[in-house]
Amino acid sequence: MANATPRLVLVTRRTPLEELLARHATRGQAATFVAQRGLKIEVLEERHARTHAAERQVGALAPGDWRRASVEREQLDRFLFEEQDIVVAVGQDGLVANLAKYLAGQPVIGLNPLPELYDGVLVKHAVEAAPRLLAAAADGKAKVERRTMVEARLDDGQRLLALNEVFVGHRSHQSARYRLRWQGKEERHSSSGVIIASGTGCTGWARSICLERGDHPAVPQPADPALLFLVREAFPSGVTGTDLTAGLLAGNETLEIVSEMETGGLAFGDGIEQDWIEFAWGQRLTLARAAETLNLVL
Image (cartoon, rainbow, N blue to C red):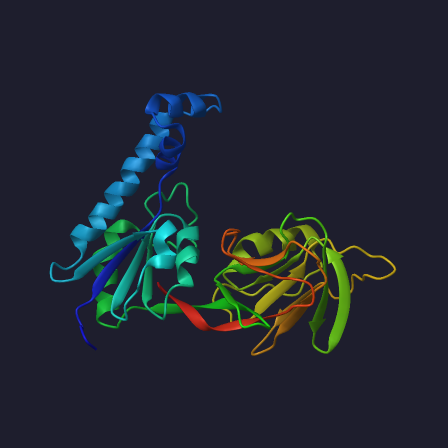
């Protein structure tokens, strides 16, 4: 290693208060806006203060000889992570999902500054646990859970990674037309799109679909290596079917989708529609378990 000194990388996102002030310019205008919706800006200010206090506390709790860096969610695609990094996400669970695809095995510690608001599925720890977790990660003694990720690869080589799920469908969420291939079977679909979820993702969007449908395979648990695919609202017609609409991808098993959308076809990961790849007519998208994992510190 060129430099064995750990680097603390603090990953954050703008608070709801900061988003409001960016949109409305002044506190007064922001307060009026939220008041019209039955909220008090003082509540957002208190949450904002607690979140930033937690971020400062993490920096203060890290060993003094460690290097330090910080990055906001919006800059993750331009940030260069290093092998020695110990990554700390302070915020809600989605922040961990947002950063997972940019890593190469670095340990991730999720800290929850507002446990009354955030479930803590991925941000599992209180801020006060940071010294113990940082020391264990630096010594290679931290208990780490390797969370499976989803890979979507186009036949032209473009690749998309996601921790929770990949959505394949139409940009406007109108009917998506495609051919789905799995385990030697093929079916043409007109649907609201396909979700391919990891065990982590099965605690979120995929879980909601499963609860509504009821006719799905066993749902992978967060640490399971299997993936689950679900077709949303498949439409039966003379040329489209509804038989091949759910299944588990075990081991190195793949799911193939061939686009029959003249315009608007896409795939995106983890609910970030701005981070997408075009899925044009005739293109083949292969979905499988990624070689990369999220190394989540427990």
